[in-house]
Length: 168
Image 1 (cartoon, one colour):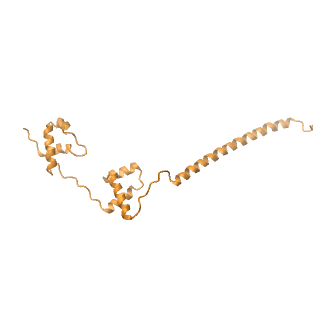
Image 2 (tube, helix red, strand yellow):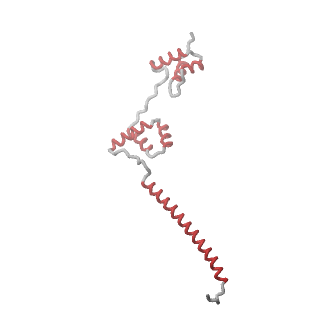
Image 3 (cartoon, helix red, strand yellow):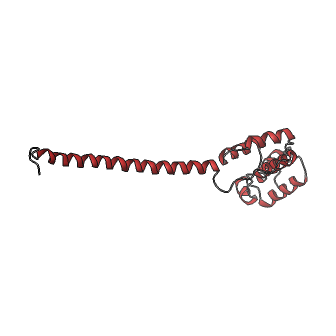
């Protein structure tokens, strides 16, 4: 039976745990230790604190820090909000809880997001539609004026060829 150092065991167990954990079967093939041994080390590490190193401590957020994050997240687009959450080490659910708690503490109702576009956006759309309609009417009027001038030019030429002294 081979003996392994505590540092080696800790590194291997660390690879079995955490966000990028590897299965014991896969790790057994890469490090040359049996799957049963790795599973035993993992069970032991979970029951005995200290083998895998210091435990991660969940940060304690003060009310002011929570409010700062809630205010910073207000009005951000999805990509920017995701970046903020990653930077602060939060989940969207935590942020939603903090926002609700802040609104409850301030005594303000939760803002309701309108299901459709805002009144300002609707007005802009209506104005743009009216502008397009008026531009089309203006283009049509300009075309009619050009045609009218051409017709007058054609008929005026015929009138010039008639004998002005001759009365009909």
